[in-house]
Length: 274
Image 1: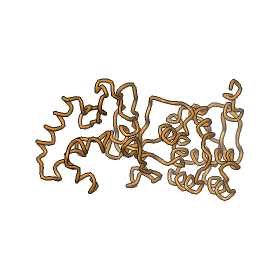
Image 2: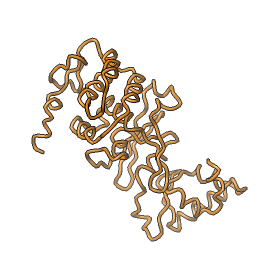
Image 3: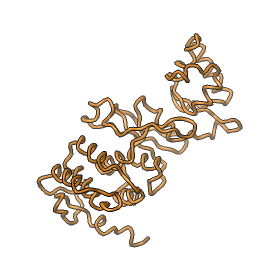
Image 4: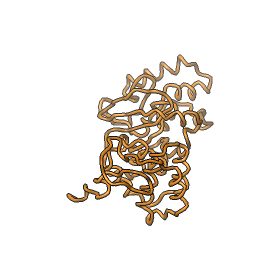
């Protein structure tokens, strides 16, 4: 809890500064002034009963703006996602959406966590956890590429565009399929290629390295991708041909990457009806 948060004396001040918060957040701030946890719990119950707070689920609350109906109020999904777990990070397609680079609008919000968690639904929105891989769980920063951004009166933990790019190529099922991934990538004007390569290397997956290399080569000019970055990924690519798609969809072999790329990706078939 930051010094600013610990100095918030009145509950109304805390609620105004925290559109979505956990029970522990409030208790830590409220008891910092010498109040008891029992009093904190009583205040939360009082404000829920008065319609000033919305109990999203056990231990998780949202502030209901003045004049809003607590039975219909929908908290900002990115703020809510960030508070679903202590380490929750908006990721994959949801990260593209947060950064304004998702082609389609979804009601599913994927988040990364080191622990196992269950999907959660609230007010028409779906919150889907993805447990970080073993190699990432070993790192305190879950592999890096995680930032905190001010948003809707609160703060959101979200992966960078660079990490989101690699993550959806590592696990395309959380990117919405190749058409959605490709169209979303096409909305990105610039990426830090060095960061893309760094994170790809960390994952230690030959197939992911090949997918990322193929994508960087496709966007070589607009993203100003240098040959040395491609060469690094080239060395990490599989020694034998591998399918780009987990469904082993047939296509054409991209020789440099030993990657069998689906025909729909090569031909951008989704553009035919555009």
